[in-house]
Length: 489
RNA sequence: GGCGGCGUAGCCAAGUGGACCAAGGCAAGGGUUUGCAAAACCCUCAUUCACGGGUUCGAAUCCCGUCGCCGCCUCCA
Image (cartoon, rainbow, N blue to C red; front, side, top):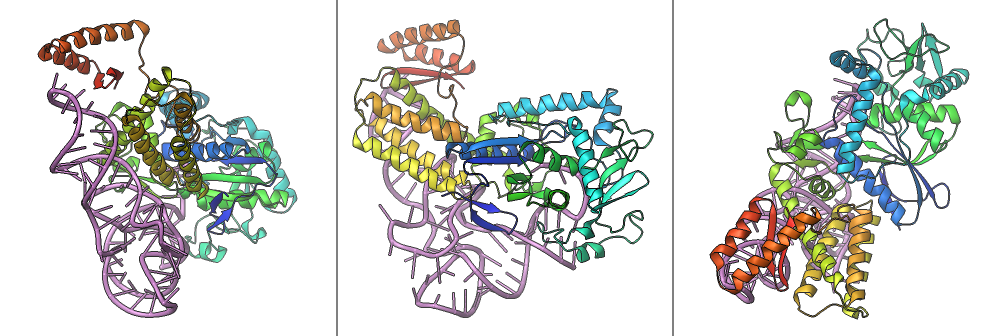
């Protein structure tokens, strides 16, 4: 039985979708005005696994994740410049070129991390008419008001305002400077539509004049457009609980009269060497830099290692990036990969035959434990623990010297493919396989054959030279009981 | 100031009232195996869960207090 931690109510709850077997998931996507960073990786890898696990459980999931290509504002929710617009001016290109460029960059990085693409990635700019329509509805229902081309949501018209973050309007009142927001009725009122200044590049016509949508609006509009008035799961970063998600709830529920979200899931943040990551702090790590080994990590991180590393902690726990921790993750993942490779190679020449009870039991028990962990609010850290224990047991079997029949190896391989592959996404078709072109492969085989002859003749010095040279080329050679094995590092 | 979270071995990290467990990984030490190496496996590595009280038959897990760290309250995954 799957239990999820619902930020709304702050409790672990049994997961029950609104409709029998279908699950609608919406996750706040990136604003595309720069390359993605390791925080994006944690967020989207986490939700990727959540969706993968729901599918593993048999749910029919529709996963929607927006692309925010209308720039939010640099300053305050309702003032300042459009970030995409600023970038466009700096680069001397159209705002849509900025958005397109970084949208591609985002998907490139997510693909590298083996994040499956959401089913629908709606763009905010492609849903302006729908956003205008929602604003109209809110005006008609008396939840919004217009002041000189700006439309604001009237928080006092929505008694539950702040129920997600646990804030009350009185508290919000206190923290606000007196002179601020003269135009608004209540300082917590937020913009649904903003009038565009002269210099504002992204602008659309509306019943209230030329302008652009407020930054909370798109998520309400696009999630309800593709899922319906009530979402099963809405995910996002913890830092968005207030005001973004509270505002989404207010505007959505005020418009539809229906509960907006059944389960709110929020992932925690990343830190770098124990400190908050921020552009101004100089410890900002983009994924492209991390993969390339640029500062401050000083060490190239294989995308799959980053994925594994992210999954070794719970999605609701903060994750600290450090070279030491990443190295530990790399070693650990390598062990699993090596074992997957052993199993796959053994399978190639495996004799027909049924799996011994011992193996069946091993696989069944691991599968059950894995499920127990994941059922507990997607505890990937626990699930990886199971995978590690399983890997030790598999190696033990493989080391025992007995030849395992085909069905035994298939059962083991199936565990890796389904749980390590389909669910966690850290094992792929290529894992443990000897990559490289055909000719390269043949050349390596030829060299290893020569080396084997040399070893038979006890000419170890020359044999080791071959191994060392291959090592320098990034090809790792290991002598096993069945002869030498090699792979690209 | 308001809201929320965290503090488990050298490091990373599960566990959130009990009995096969303080998982699992990294590092370290010892061993098996190996021409050497690597890989893999075995053994060792927290009588203890920041600290001090309390509740309970029983707490790392609940309550109170102290100390330390962090996030949000402006855009941010």
